[in-house]
Length: 326
Image (cartoon, rainbow, N blue to C red; front, side, top):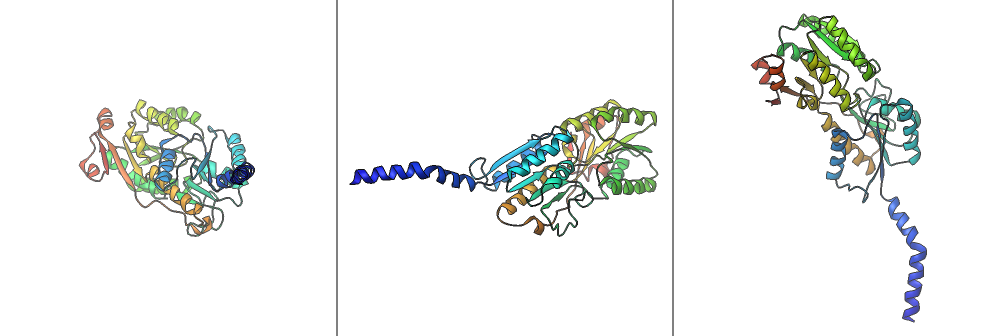
């Protein structure tokens, strides 16, 4: 009798084990990540580390579907559709480009974005009450560029002609350009604006800066919306080759040799995106999650680069720095 019971138990296990395993697998939420260029930058790693700290272990109680477009817009649209068809519990978009691609196809799946201007991009209608399936973080404020120009002028007082790199496809560009132009007039600075849509236009933009006798540079291409670390590396190299004192938004560029940075920490914003994902996985609707704007801004100065450029950064700037790289 007991042998027949064991046999019956084995039969039932064989019959129902796949269903049980399938049911368990279904309980593991899937998180999609759509990346404009690569999903391997330190910012993305900051996101995954933040999720791990919240108790999510890869392939145990969460799984990831990452898709990277390599800067190819047609491929980005295709990958957005592919991710949407997988029906993950939530999708993360690392740039405005990625978010807009998902906006075309995702009507119900929650999407967490890290972008410059979610309202101007048409992703949401209101920061406080997004109202749809999109929410997340805004990485810039309109007055950021004006503050960057002010700090650059204080750091290099003799500067009178400042170049600014803009991406006209970025919805945040118009208002930032306007506030920076107003600040330039107040500081007695001539602002030279250069629109660059792709990295292939950088070389020509810098050649024109030289022709117009630019004395310094503001990298206003945006935080979350810049292409990738290769793009920032190219801009950094060109600025140093032309001996242009430059201020950037990301502190990572200063660690790589840039002169100054002022802006919110993009790594912190990607970590905060993990909080949004966590709350959505626990049942909160994206429509009820207000979009977070940056409230903390950091100033980083690289004195080694300053010395290489023959600059003596005033103490009035250094005392306000959150970090000084010697």
